[in-house]
Image 1: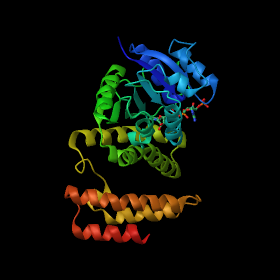
Image 2 (image 1 turned 120 degrees about the vertical axis):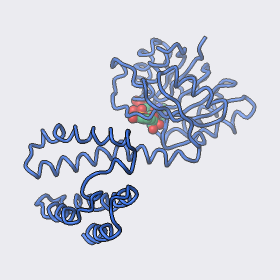
Image 3 (image 1 turned 90 degrees about the vertical axis):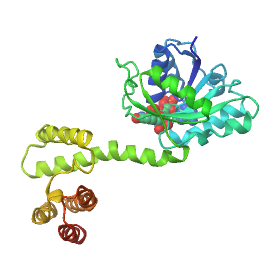
Image 4 (image 1 turned 180 degrees about the horizontal axis):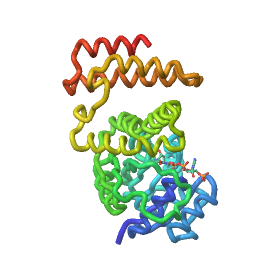
Length: 302
Ligand SMILES: NC(=O)c1ccc[n+]([C@@H]2O[C@H](COP(=O)([O-])OP(=O)(O)OC[C@H]3O[C@@H](n4cnc5c(N)ncnc54)[C@H](OP(=O)(O)O)[C@@H]3O)[C@@H](O)[C@H]2O)c1
């Protein structure tokens, strides 16, 4: 028989996790959140409408696995409150799903339950959960990566749970979580910002803004495919990789001269990215030292 679980904090991740764990055969025993309506909805989606609790420690007390899926800054206090109220059962495993924080956030479990064998870990689904509707069809954990760390016993459980959810687990160093999360922010959030800049420049060139993404999409996909097949730095193409100093200079001038009030910000972003791109081009070996110096002068003086 699969383990029982509770969800504390029934938002986007907590609700989806509750539903998918139940579908994978784990036994839902408690749901609690800041508002009862969230806990009730998550409990309903997991098929146990009567298992929602006002007190977080009551929701946790019968569970082999407790998932604290509140916002990051509420995890420590939520864990402490459950601990103080003896809400963790003997040998329970307590997880949170934050990408930036480690299992150390759950340290109160150890001080308040020293003899009970409670273990702690973190399981971060490396995916963007934007939907407030856990009833949406499909499994959002399917084929995603799941970063796990914590007590050895918790890591072992997390591996099993991740696989049961359809995700691919990988372990991460406890002290590496903040940089791991920064990497994820760059790959996901900053990619959105980068696309925003690219679409704005495309629109400034005269292309309809509504068509800009579709025009760029095959290029973006081709670049991703190149990174996958040849890796970095070989996937880098374009004027910096070729050492086309004059073209880069014209880019910067054209962006700065836009009437848009954000033109300077866009040019600064272009230049900053260009400086980093010079390092990649040098590593690729296609950019001479002399051309690199000229490019640096343009990108840093602008
Ligand atoms: N969203 C993502 O893309 C994503 C991806 C990976 C990991 N994560 C991680 O997953 C965790 C949850 O994120 P989320 O996006 O699901 O957040 P969310 O949608 O804001 O949900 C958090 C829920 O926690 C409840 N809550 C807030 N304070 C609480 C407290 N003190 N006690 C009990 N419940 C409380 C809220 O309650 P009410 O609804 O009851 O008001 C809210 O529904 C975070 O650690 C986050 O870093 C998120």
